[in-house]
Length: 311
Image: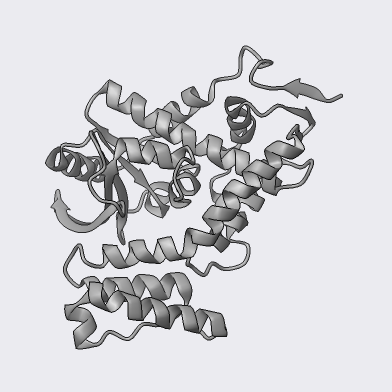
């Protein structure tokens, strides 16, 4: 028998989305990761530093660690986040990190789907950890913002997914769509691997996120039946259509902006572009000296190769 569930009909022993997200963000990280995050946060005057990516899941310190440094006050840059590269040795362990820096308020509004950006909510519906925070109030604000990412992702997932299905059916529909909207090449089935390696994180998350977003649904066993009206679905899909159209140009703009923030900028950008699109970019001496001036030509080259279907 189907059980009704909505924002107004919640089982009393079911945790709120915000409670679940706040608890998830307290997951333990390696001492070196915490030390690096503390160093970054104190230097930037940040509210908190969020750690995410494959190193969070594996606990490895190899490769490049991924951090978001969230600042108080208004956003400074129009194209955000500001990306930088850092190397630091902690207790004799060499660490490398790619650091994205932005205002918490901008992060919150992007996670809530109020901006054209797709990367924040698609990334932070996946696991992350608050590796350092200024104080309890800052931690609470960051957790609320990350909960907004789950609500945004859930709304789109049920609009894109089937009329009825398992939670994994909806998450797969979401990740297929967001990967297609970004300027990157992912292997087929990438969405399945995300769900497989983060099963505990996603288990039970969609019902809580739908409830928090005010989207009623019923359940029959593992099957969800979202009660989206025709108008709600149409509005959500229209919201997504605009972001899907602008996703690739916006992603490339960010990659090119990021190329100016640290030593070897042009080579880093070329590597990232080839990694995400499959299109190699030749680094000439002029492009290395003038990565910003070279950006339009690089973008045109990548766009033509992608349109032609060339590797």
